[in-house]
Length: 143
Image (cartoon, rainbow, N blue to C red; front, side):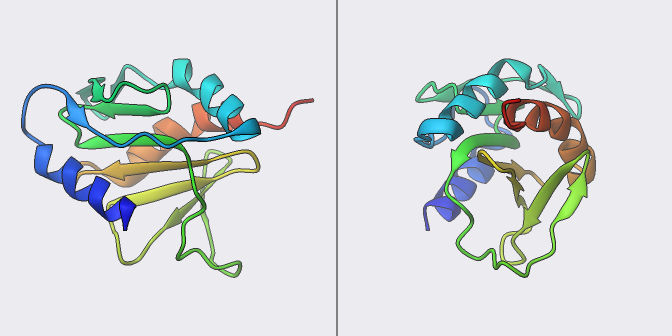
C-alpha cells in the first residue's frame, strides 16, 4: 500500500519543478550501513536526468529529474516476491519486477533491498544497469 502511494506521488510530480515528496525508508543494522555506503555512489546524472532533491531530506532517497526516477534504499522485502520468483540479473544485482507495478523494481541483495521507480519515458534496463554497479559495491558483504 505504501509503495503504491509513493509511486502515485512520484508519477504525479513528474514534470513539476522543485522538490519531490518521497517517504524515506527506515533501514536498520546492516541495511542502514549498506545504504549509507550507497548514498555517495549514486550518479549525479541518470539516463539524461539531473539529480534532484527530495523532501524530507534523507540519505536513503535519491531522485533524478522531477522525480521521474527515484531510489529508496533499505525498503522492506517486496510483499509479492515469492521464493520461487526469477530475478533479472543486471550487473551482478538481482532485480525483482512486480507484475502489478510495471514502473517499480527492487534490487535484492544480501544486505538491503533497494527500490527504484522509473517513469515511462525511460528505459528500465538502462537505468537499472547504471544503478547496479553502485548498488553491488555498497551492498557487498564485508570481507
